[in-house]
Length: 166
Figure 1 (spheres, rainbow, N blue to C red):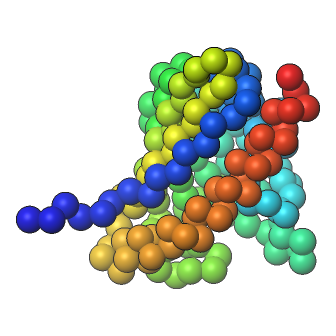
Figure 2: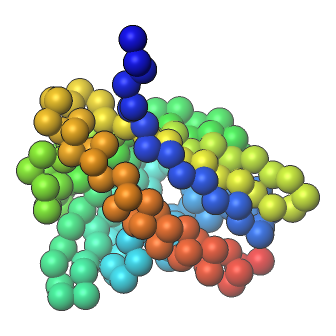
């Protein structure tokens, strides 16, 4: 039986030490300066970085459309791994549908792993839908190209930001 394709995966090597990459991924004052799709502006954010804690943030598109997102942290292994549930949300942190897709999964489980070699940090992100219908899974699996483009923009912003905080 063929194994079902279940996870989106992307990787990037940053020209920065692991300690710095970890810091800018786990501290609010840094995270808000680079997280999210390129071209969107961070409106507000709350970060409680601990197992069971949340990152809740609002962003605005150039034309003024507002959207909110939320992470719920499930596992944190310092400087190695972060596992979290991702969802779109409302301003109060309630889970909502994707603003542009009624068939996007309500929740995805993402894993970020980090490793360092010769002063450079490799970040791998993988994730997939949880508690999703077949239609929601199909929407997610059909969006890998778009997600690759989105994460490339986010990673570009992180790379630019890392260069300013060295």
